Amino acid sequence: MIFLIVVGLSILAIFLLFILPKKDKVLSDYYLIAIIFFFAGILGTHIIMEKWLSIEAYLISLFFNTYYFPVLMIYGLILLSGNNKFNKQWLWIYGYPIVYTIFILLDVLVLNDYGSPVAVQKLFTEPSKYQLFFYLTQYIYVIVLLIWLWKKLKAYTLEIKSRYSTIEHINLNWFRFFILSFLCLSSIGLVIFTSFSAGIIKNIEIPFGIEYMIFIILLFYLCYNGIKQYSLASVRNNDEIILVSGSRKNVLVTEKYQSSSLTKENIDTYFKEIVQLFDQEKLFLEPQFKIEEIAQRLNISVHKVSQIINSKSNKTFFDFVNRYRVEHFKKLLSDPNNHKFTILSMGIESGFNSKASMNRVFKNFVGQSPKEFQQNQSPRTI
Image (spheres, rainbow, N blue to C red):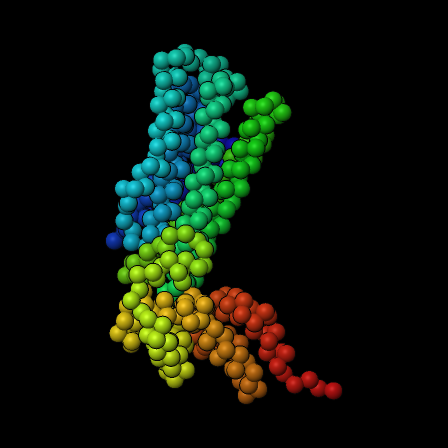
């Protein structure tokens, strides 16, 4: 086990070597460094607890295992904010960890004596009812905040779809997978610990050991993808993304536009101009096409362009643009003269910027892959 931890610490050191030399680091990068620091602390104190079990080692381990999560949460919120700035309103996330720390310090320094390794070991094997309460509520704290962050991520996804025609570089799918996996793991951990508290499970060493290993793998996954996200940050730094409140699709069409001055006649007129731009100038063929370009052409705000497209087509900007790309792509695939070209080259010509996005978007609209669609268009021989 110690060998694996040493390997893990070495990998974290390599992660840091990728981040620390970078110039023009933004706030999310510093929080990623902090996550790696806490991650290393979790692994390092595991060795200390195995070799030199003491109340001091327990408190150090508790610090890393308690405060890594609020740091991780704020890292996620910074990614979703799009402006790489800290919001003081996020400080409430530290509320529970601080209360938990105060209780532990009172328990250790005032209420009880944990001078021997045996007494420290009982903190894990025979926790008091108060300690059980805080162990359980810590699981609940993590689960509730992960659900809250998941909702923020859904709102973020809706917002970028209302502004960008290509979102692969900013959709944070890797972070979505991490949140869902961490949420499932924490929920399972809560069930296991509740069963232990109720006396249903007598020994939780094995299930907790498995949970711990999966947790470590997830943190490695987060750090690795966080480093990859660093290289993509420059794409977004010039485009501040403001999250909409809520995650329902109708938020984009109703609450978001209540203050708009556009009349129905204005919306109809502007939408005709947008359609004309798409039909005649084929703006959608530009892979990095953004809603700001339409706003500049029509000399109106991005907010109003988004309202017009949402109101008239009942689609986000992302879906509206990609519908045009798919239709253009279908025409190219259906033309026998284009069979000498690869499907990918025709997809790129239609405005898609990668094979993955091309296949995913096309199948979402058409119900089959571009290759299947092309094969169905080919004349059958008898």
